Length: 453
Image (cartoon, rainbow, N blue to C red; front, side, top):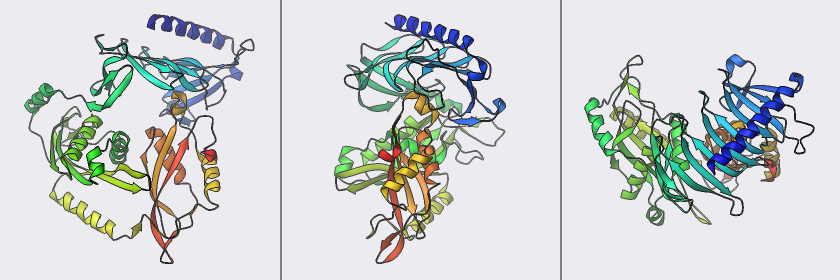
């Protein structure tokens, strides 16, 4: 089946390349793209180049061939779109390639959405996974997974599924798959033998000039925790929440080892904190000085677990992440927390804040400002980003952040748009304007108007 899929997709590639050779250069749209989403003015500032070629008049589907090239001249993507614009609506197979020319994946689309098979490859060219989209059930079935040497881990929808870091250097997550469905929750890949070997690479340091950092920074780690959080059921039942403090070592290669819960509201919250931190690896390692090679660094991380009670039950989230390195920083953190308690920020007030013109006007504002992230549109990603912010007494918005969402690029876009918002009507308590913590969902739907969400 995989061989047949490749032959079919390869035939599409040849056909598209032939069409591209016949196209007039003046009818071809060319974009220089950076960071998978930003259009820049020059090739020197770009990561790759996007070409949207004229469609073939004889093609009844009127599809526009789409091609992307790395700056080294190698192919990055070959596909076809129903639209001749940056807002691509892909149709049929899409082939992506690594910078060295090896295939990265083959994904089938229908009207801009994933609607067929997904085949993924390792950078060495070997098969990684095969997934199949069930049109009737509207769900993705996980059918086959292999390691980088070709050993089958899951077959016919049953076995073990692995997920790697973006560079395919480490297996970071694993889960059991049965009948094509992922069961339970993602677990970190824990290699206890490798963990013991790390101890022979030097003593961990507590104070360095360059501290380890999650690859997305503080805000990125908070987003990651929210996205992957699986709040323990017993803790929801018992209303267990608060700070979990975890000690760990960030190894020279960025992996996290030797976890120890220093304090937590419950044992299960501590276990969830460790699971989330393990999944977040690899990090950017620390070093004694900027010009020095990486060092092992001992770190203590604070995770905040919150439960918000609503009329429909509990909505759980981990709202923030901060980490410190010594007692002085810990005291400074406590002082900041005490100051926040006295700022007078309300969650419920007599009169809620409001966007000027109300909800309908807010929807139109979003529709006119949202720019669908190019990488998400290309991959058929959609969903809602939950954005939190404070409506100040004068109606200005502050502390804008994404709590969770389908992707980090969507989260960044939602935050960007909220920063463009005009002043709101402030919230009132006891007849006076007060600071109010406010949360809104921002929908990203392919081919739909955000004002109608």
